[in-house]
Image 1 (spheres, rainbow over the protein chains, first blue to last red):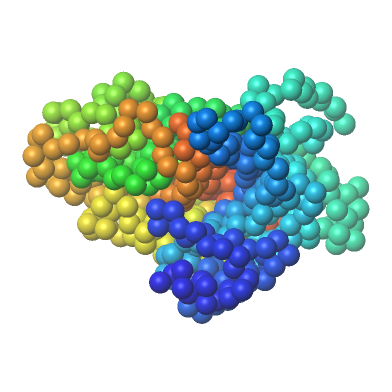
Image 2 (tube, rainbow over the protein chains, first blue to last red):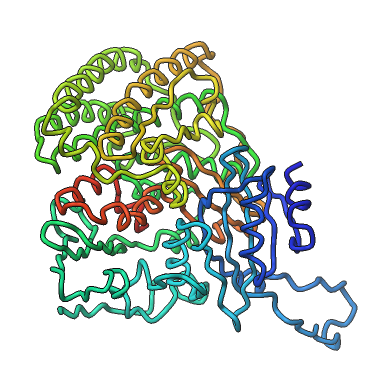
Length: 183
Length: 378
C-alpha cells in the first residue's frame, strides 16, 4: 500500500525499494535527492513532512565480507581462474528517516555516496532539523553537504584529523591528543 | 566562527563575547555556549557540544547485542529504563519477535516510573536554575522513593540495565502493591506542593511566561518531539500515535501547551507526571489479572544473530522520540547502530530560541529543554 504510493509519487526517481520487518526504504540517486525529499514532503497523500533523523553508513566491510562462491570439491581449485573483481559498490550511504505526522507512517530514503565524490546536497533548505545531523555526518564520515550554512565538525574537536565512524578507523583511536589553545 | 552577516552589519568587536560553560553549574555538566551580548541581550549564541562524546555508536559495533544494553543506560541517565526498552525493542523488531504481554506491562510500569523521575529532576532543576530551591527538595525526595523501587527490582538505582532482548529478566516482586500504594499519595502530594509553590507564583510567572516562545511550525521544522513539541501546541505523543507496549489500551490524556515558552514546557511536564500515575494504575491492574506463571521472555536464542537487515524503532521517552536504527550483517554484533536522541534535535534550535533574550533567560530556556549531555553527545 505505502510502497505503491511511494512508487507512484516518485516514479522513475526510485532506483529500488526494500522492506525489512515492515520498514520501507527507497533508494534514490544522489543528484536527485532534494527533489525526491521535496516530492515526498509535498505529496498530499504521503505527506512525509517531518525529518526524524539523518546519518551516514560506511558499507566497506559489507562489500569485503561477501563470501567467495563455493567451489565444488575436486574441480581443481588451483587452476581455476581467479574471479575478476568487479567495480565495488559505492562505499558510503546517507539515510534520511522521514515521518508523516498525518498518517504516522515512516520511510527511509537512502542515497549511495561513492568515495570519489563525497558531496550530497544539503537538506537544510527543506528541514532545519538537518543542520546538526549533517554536521555530524560530515564529522564522522567526511561526507560534505553542499549548501549547508555552517558545515563544521560537531562532536570531535576542530583539529581532529580523522573520521572516526569509518570502518577503517580503529576502535581504540590513533592516539590523537587535543592541545588546548587559549585565546 | 561568527559570520559578520549574522550580526546585521556590526562586527564582532561591537559585542561582548561571553563563554558559558562547560564547567558551570547552570550548564548541566558539560554544555558550552558562546554568546555574543549587547548589554544583557543575547545577540547570537553558539552552542558547542561533544564534551561528553564517548563514541557510543562506534562502541556498539564492537559489542554483542546484549552487551550494549548497559551502555544505553548512559544516554539519558535520568530515565535509563526508557533507553533500555527502546534499544531492546529495536533489536526485537529486527529479529521479528515480540515480548510477552506480562513483560510489556512490567516495561510500561517501570518506564512510567522513570518518566515521573525524569520530569521531577527536570522541573526541580528548572526551579533551582531560576532561584527557587525549595520545590527541588519536595520532588527529589519522592524521586528517591522511585529509585528505591528500581533498586529493589534489580539492584541498580540510576543505571538500571532493565530488561533483556525479548522480555524482562524478573517479575515484579510481591510487595509492589504495598510499595506503590505508599508511594502514590506521596507523589501526588509532591506534585501538588510544587504546583502550589510555583505555578501561580508571581516571580515564577514573570521569569517563565513568554520567555523563549517557539511556534509549532518552527518546532516541527527543527525536529522537536516530546514535551517541548507539545508545549508548542502540537498534540503528538508516540504512545498515542504509534502505540507500542499496549499503550493503546490505557486511558490517558496528552497535555499540550499553547505558546511553547518555558512556562508551557513546565506545565506539560507537570501534567504528564499525573498522567503517568494514571497509566501505572491501569497497567498494574492489567498485570494483576494475568496468571502468575505467565511467561516473561519470548523465545530468544542464546547467541543473538539477527538476520541481515536494518530497522528503525522509536519510543516516547520523557524527552521525546528516542530511536535506534540497527543495521545487521547477520553476525552477533550490530554493523551500524544510530541513536536518535530527542534533545539533540531540540538543542540545535537553541540559537534561534534565545536570540534577543536576556542572558538569565538563556539559562531558563536551557533548563526547560532538559538537555541531557549523555544522550546529546553519545
